[in-house]
Image (cartoon, rainbow, N blue to C red; front, side, top):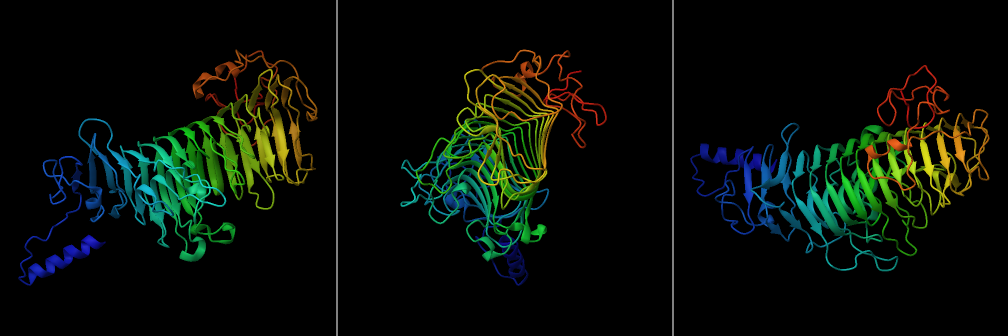
Length: 538
């Protein structure tokens, strides 16, 4: 570490009898204060009485384990925060706030965009940092969306970027308010999906050229992200290239958690997680995404949240609504290309133009996606289906014990296959689901020899394409008090649950490995016939 080398050199000079004079000493576990109105960069910065003034001063220092950089509440800096140094496991470097008043604001409007450099707060090639308690904006006031002929420049609120060729660890971004970031959709020299509100990116620009630049232990927690583009929150490790199955798994990023965040009015995708092993996306709220589209764009479609190039990922206890359909997609949740062993469970989806769930198949399809105990209300009213299978089947896909409610007057398809090879023979199953269809949308699903459709309850309008099912029930499921207009909140959906007298109770198929609880936390027996749908009444 740069500072340790300096301290050792200082000790050697003292031992030789050399007078160091005014050479500054920066000790470990030191708190530094920054005050935009009352500070001075010539101050020591180590007390509230003598704080630094600018982020430019902060950017000249190499910090170490346990250090804290605290910005005074109620102050604003129109410059980039780009600190140096790394903490250690259990003793990170922290950026936060001190004093009373509103969050300190870091405003990146004057930061040159492009690549990783366009972030208001940038952690470049560092480990063990925590960023918390800030307000971050990055809006140049110009149209930066870009076109296919005149591209925009990447901009982000908070970004961690690893181009070092080595692994980095322990990045925590917690409890920040990030808003009004005018990132690009068609971007010069970078992947558009990796700019927006909060971004953690490994070597996206260079692919394999710089070695494997991975992260381990990234946590993006309890942030509020509003009015940003292109992406609300993104983790992307592209350092191993697109076909990462050809690369050792140890080279991938791992242990990424995106939890407790609230996102609203996002230009493109809400949350993206790509290129990692052992991941968790939970208890996030996304309200409205896909607000911008670019004619002829290479990336026109947007979803609420999606995973790609991942192994062992879980999306659970999330609520997504208001995702727009732009040429393609428009779903709440997406298990995209090159994923394996993914679980989508206990989520609520409503009022999304393209449906609840997208499972991507085809040439770069992943394997073994499980979609269970989710609720969809009034999804897919513009395009696709509540359950959409795209470009063929994802082998081993299991869709069971979900509930979908489609109100009168909607043309939502309960299921839909899109793209080529829709009737291929990869095994997949659709079991124990409750579909209440008061709309007019038809059904379309793959019909290959690997298809298992069984023990579903389908009530309401029986439209064209409804699948054959030897154990189908078509009687009223006796929902407790379903609302034609979807309510807000994970906990506000009890009305779509079932009465104890429902014909769905105890008539489902036992499914191995189905989990130990339903959407509401009621137990699920591994041996007793379950109730169909997302609710197991007791």
